[in-house]
Length: 116
Image 1 (tube, rainbow, N blue to C red):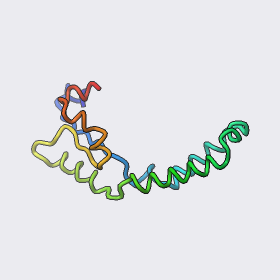
Image 2: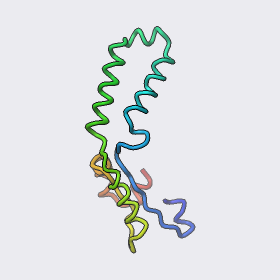
Image 3: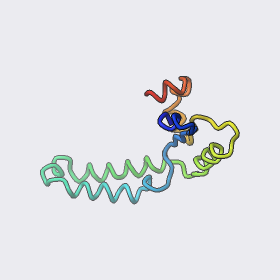
Image 4: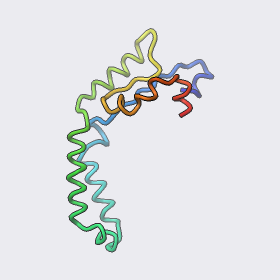
């Protein structure tokens, strides 16, 4: 945003939370976790134990199910508004988690949040 300001280009930032799309997919995450688990030395795997890994996979699956929003249209609506509005906002937040995490910055001037 700041770099483009010099060229007279206004940029809107879409800050989104977790949505069930792309990388936030239980199958993809589990496959990557299994790949990483298999690259660990036997000593490290033994110190954690197979039970730990199975429980971790269950917790991850549960988190994706509970925390990830399946309605990706929230992100699309933000992008649409940023593109067609006469006065687009500096920042858009899509999803409850994005609104929660960025809440304190929403009260700060954009220049301060840009610095942070």
